Length: 278
Image (cartoon, rainbow, N blue to C red):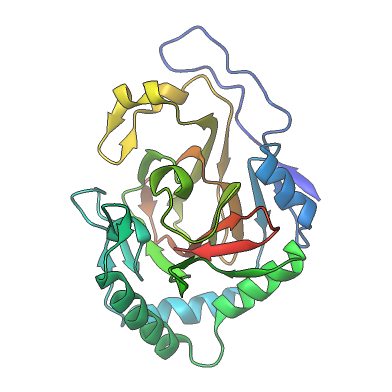
């Protein structure tokens, strides 16, 4: 296994403070990741795990062509702007008064039918999840709400980037899913990447209450993480990346080309399960 370069020693903007290097906050890249890699990610001693060429480039190209004829929607633009187009529902958009709105389940079923029509019997999502089971060496299944399985495997296209934010189900939507979680990862398999831009930036910094002073819509000003170690991940076509989504992270805007990924979250339960949702 080899480690990719990180930029944790850059000089922070408008300050004389030098960012400190954390040798444990790095990106591991391997064609055969191990359970121990994901355990280190959960423990905070890795920034991200990268699996190069997880899906063949030819299969990625086929998926992109098929998706060209598919109608995408967007996240609720009152919450997330610039718009992010996607196929499949996000729990984020359907959370209201400590519950998931009923319309979520109709959207989930419609999206499953659309995805099946696109991929046929050769479902790359099945492949990705089957390999995740081999890596985790334990149960991997969909997260549930009231015993009903949440949608897994959103396809997202980002062009304008994404503001610095974090994703943590147990903090943002406490008590909604049936499972208790002790850690959370973001997962993306990139089926198209831009020629320039579209990098994932992960900061060694989690949310704290005083950060609300720097909130901007759905995200936060990068000033609060300016002095923190960070990694920058520039994925290739077919690469898969896991990262701790409880850390602040952002995505740089595309300068040229498309950024399409199959995306979901992984939650680690006290019973050693991985549960998935989008």
